Length: 136
Image 1: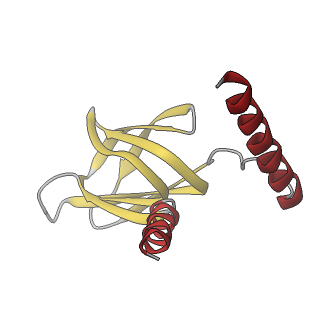
Image 2: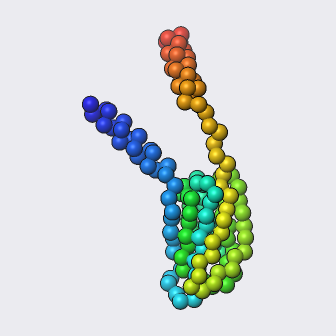
Image 3: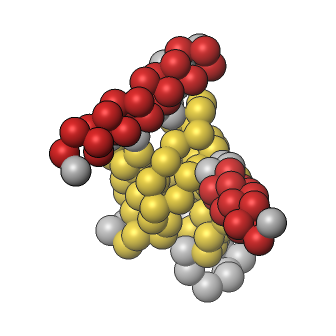
């Protein structure tokens, strides 16, 4: 019974850590001349790396939306790496305003039927057992 509980807890933790969330980070100290930038991905992007004016502001998160607060007004250099791609851009930030930046997320993973997945799992189990008996 204890192993079952441990397995359920690990499954829950694994599933909950893969849920994309909205993240919020602070770029500088609060100031009335600051604005914000919100990056909005079309699909959840894993391992997102965001740099603003050469400073990393977010790294290694599964992101659907990322808001960067306290960005000084004026032009800012934004670099975003996600899903194997990278994009650099110059963005105008208005004091007291939010600038939204839509970005393409990585393409969705190809879907496989549950029956095919189950069949492959059973096949792998038989192959591993046969290899174990043959080798040992």
